[in-house]
Image (cartoon, rainbow, N blue to C red; front, side):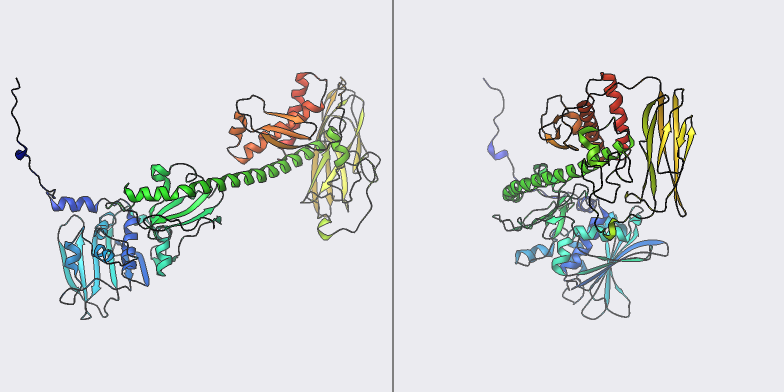
Length: 604
C-alpha cells in the first residue's frame, strides 16, 4: 500500500518571469557587445536611421583624453512635450525601442529594434555625451557614465544649435585608443556596406592623431560577379545575393547581412552552412535576408528559428548552382596551371639540354628541332634555334629563308653568356668543341660587336683559339676536373660564363637509343588513380607523360605552385631518362636523373 501523500493539482502555481535586479540586467546587456568597432557601427546606424545625409567620425585627443566624436545632420533626438530632446525616454526605455513601433507601422530602412545600442558605449569608453537641439534653438546634452545607473541632462552653451546629433565617447578604453581611423573606415565599409549604398549617406572619418581623413565607401569585391544568381524568392520575402567568383588567394568569404548591415563576416559561422559551396575559397560576396532575427545582446548573430530555416531552404537550389560554377572554375584553373607548368618545364628542359652534351641527350630528336646541326653556317652543334634570329628547317642543317625582322625580334644589348655544354665527361687526350652563347635580357642571341676571351681557371688542358665564339678543348693526359671560363664584352658591357669538364680514363658506355626519336618534347596530362602506386608513365603514341593526380605525392605537391612545378619536372626527368637511356644499369639511370634534374631546376 502506498504511503506517499497525494498532491492536489490546485497546489501548483503559475507566474511570470521578471527581473530581480534591473541594474544587474542593464550591466549584462551593456557588456554583451564585445567588439568596440561594432559599437561604433551602431552609433553610425542610429544616425542613418535618423535620415542623416552626412556623418563625421573624429578620432582625437584633448587634454590627455582620447575620444570618439560622431556628428550627423539627421533629425536629432525626438522632442518631448516641452519641445526639448526627450533624453528621459532614451534613458528609461532600455529594451523598448521606439524603432520597433515604427517598424510595426510599416516604416522600412530602420535597423535598431532593441533599445540597447547606446549601452554599447561601455565597450568603447567611460563616458557618453549626447547633444541635440530643441525647438527653442538651444542645445541640450545627456551624460551617462560607465557603471553608473544615473544620467544627467543639462543645457549646453554654444553659439549655434546642433543640426542633428553630436555623440562623444571619452575617455576611451586603453585598447580602443589603438583603433585607427583607417581601421574604422574599413570596418564600416564592410559592416554597413549596403546601408551606405542604399541611403546615399556620406561618412567621413577624421583621424587627428594620424593627421589623415578617410571617406567610407561601400566595400567592393574582387572577382567576377555571378549575374545568374541575383534575387532569391522565399515565403518571408526576397533574399538579395551578390556573389563573386574570384581566386583562392583573396581570402574573402560570403558574409551574411540583414537589411544592409553585416551580421556575420562569414556565413559558415552558422554550422548548417559549413560545407561546399559556402566554404569554397573561390566565392566572396553577400547574402542579405531582411527577415532574419538577430541575437539581441551582440547583434552579431542569428537566432536559429523558423526564419533561418526559410533562408536555408531558399538557398538550397543556389548551392547546387554554385557547386557547378566552382567545379567549372577549378577545371579551367587547372588547365591554365597545367599550361603554365608545361611551358616552364619545357623551357627548363631546353635550357638543361643546352648545358649538357648533345651526343648524350639527343632525345626525341630534340636537338634536331631546337639546335642547328654541325656544319650550319655561323653555327655549332650546340647553338639553340631559340637563340637564333633566323628560322631553322628541321634536319636541313641550314638556316631557312631570310625575312625582314620586326622591331621586337632584334636582340638588345648583351646581358648574359653561357657555355654550351656547361658540363660534360671527356676521356684523357680527347677533344671537343665548346660554344659561348651570348644573350640579351630576353634570351635572344646577340651576334654583333662581341669580343671573346677563353681561359682555363682550374686544371689543365689546351684551349684554341682563345678569341673565338667556338673553342676546341683538348683534355690533358691526367684525369681530373677542369673549369673553363669565357669573358664576352660588347662596348662597356662585360659578361662571363663557365663550364666544368670531367676528364676520365674510362670511356662512357654506349647508350642504346630509342627506336623512335622524332616526337619532340612531350606534353603531359592527368589520370586520376587514387590507391595505385604509379606516379607517371610515358604514352609513346600520344607523346605525353601521364601523371597520376590521385597519388599521395601529387596531392602533397599541390599545396603550392612551386612545389607542384618541381614535382612534375622530376616526373619529366624520370620518364625521359628511363625512356632514352636504354640498357644502362639502375645506378647509371639514377646518375642521369640527378644530372638532368639539377640543370632543369636551375631554370624553373
